[in-house]
Length: 317
Length: 298
Image (cartoon, rainbow over all chains, first blue to last red; front, side, top):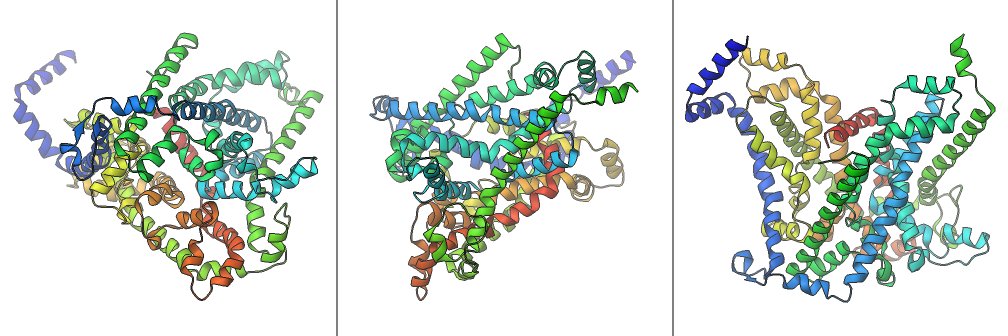
């Protein structure tokens, strides 16, 4: 067997590179043909914008194009670090994202654990189907619901008055922006995000539960000593990925919810990029700000990965 | 029997299960009520609703005016037309490109597969960011055209990996015997692979379809003409920005629209959301599988 295979390898090596290539193209010509549009697509819509990042180091003028615009080095980055809004933007971005991870990350895990404890399978399936629903509702609709409920004669005001508080427009109050953002995010995504944990739960060995029951462990102890450890690898991988997006706040949602009144707490780096770049046409400056955002993200991804590798021995790379 | 002994519930179990059931019921209520509220509001009488928009359990004074006006409004209609055009053109492109990419990535013994794979995967982790992407679309001459909403999202690498996994699960002998019969890769893709991975295709259609249907940000960047905006952007203008976009274009019915603007919102939400909500439960089994594949590969 070994001999034979070494002979074939030798024979293959006898072909020159051009012969191998021409044979490969002859056999696989349709495969190369079908991948061609995808390569063209990626060049046009993925790699060209990546190349476009270099305008962060230029004084880009649309009529001059990238080729003729002047290089300015790190000037835009320096401007951003000295921007009056720099610390506010960084603080808001980290706060919103941090709060969203703090409350939004455990929520689907808890939901999956509770769903897992439901005995009746039709009730479980019904709850699952219903909790997936908000994921399919568009952000525009979710945010308009938030807006309708938050208005001064809306549901939340009604509840607040019933509890002895004041009717007000909650969306215009800087105090409530973070809770509104985080809770509506959980509402939209908790069901969908629990799917992956439920999938991981189904692969836990059922005999462990039987054994635990014989040893007299109650439901809570089973949850903490069997279910949670079984989920840990999934949790860690998703957590590392989530931390890698620490500065990737859902800016589409913020754009829909914030207003000048709440800029103080709601304006984040990406919304600032949007206003500067799209609305004020400061292309180079906003590209530099966006690049700063990505670099910090990579930093956090690597950091979380390293910490996780040291403590739980689970890592992405 | 040992089995029945194990299944016997303790008091602790019963308390635990009751609390769990109550929590789940509360969750179900919190999930469904906002949508129920919108449906009730959309069938409500305008004046009665405006007077008291708080908690609603049933339509306040039944009326179909909201739907009548929404379905007659030119911008609402053009919004629907545009999103349907976008879906009709996008989805076939999405599916064919995803299928091609998945087929290529699943194929064996291709000399340049590794570099091409790296070339494709790289775009999953790095992107140009908002502004360079925006400038790129402008420089390609797609500004203020529906193509700006179709071409940049022609394929998702993530979805093509789902597709690749589905194709890899098919037996190799299928393609081999087809080659023997003289079929080429294109014939194999459309005649053999495509029908066999139908469940995956359905999920991909759901992912892409919901993505297009719910997207608003690209259109807000690239579309200037109000009559080219998809329905989500019309809703955004009416619901979020409180713009008088609907009034500005209605001529004879201005007063009517103004009076009913509040209630049209709800009707538009219902007619834009219900189609998606009717489809996803049927595909639930499949997209759960899709998420698992994505989790393993990603």
